[in-house]
Length: 354
Image (cartoon, rainbow, N blue to C red):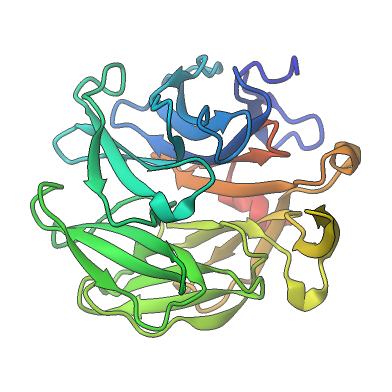
């Protein structure tokens, strides 16, 4: 595990890539990374780590790559409820400079008890306010970052894990997080982990993970998130795992996802409670670029493919996060075989060359 030292180096397999394996105090399970570039240029990464997803010792960690540095700091723990599993963190720096941390919190291995909690930092993430409950609707989850709309509203995509199905909603605040209103995405059963960008004309464009492991689904809103079209199947594959996309400074969309789907029989057999079932592959991890606001995705290239290490840990490369920094670079962080979090930095041209 010596490579998990946080040092940013040139990739041994591709000199155009910079990469780092973030330091990990708990090597058993590391998952669900999210990245944020701060207004001072620091890069932050949050994820959850512990002995196993759903266990009460699973907590949120945060590491920092200071502006101009090639060394990620050792992570600090930002949650610690001994009776709950703390997962799926996201970060948001508000226009006033305050840094918000949101994450889920549920009783061990019981998604139906999940709630969303938050903390706020006024010193760029070095100290934090006490944890408070934001949404206590049982079974509520989140995965993707908050979006500040052109009209100033905050839009936070969330979803519910209920006995009668999983479906997506958005939470909207017009007073910078003081109060929120919830709006359901009609027809979104089995479509979760909604990720939203705002297009040039103000249309909101969303992508969804599909519980059916078939394709990425998409939806649009033309009233600032209050109503959405019924999610429809796109051309892009999905393996019932998280993906993430962003709008870059040049208007292009960049999507990081597993190029895998049950429609192509990309699965492995796993055994659970004495029975075998099909589990979709979480490899390769692919970066795609759209120059026409998601209508077509002509450019794509694999960021991470299965190698010899994968044969001993077939969990895969998953739950990616992607941001575009002020210098135009693309940064990606993802679960590396759940052993740790891998960070990759590249240029958009790298994708098009591939």
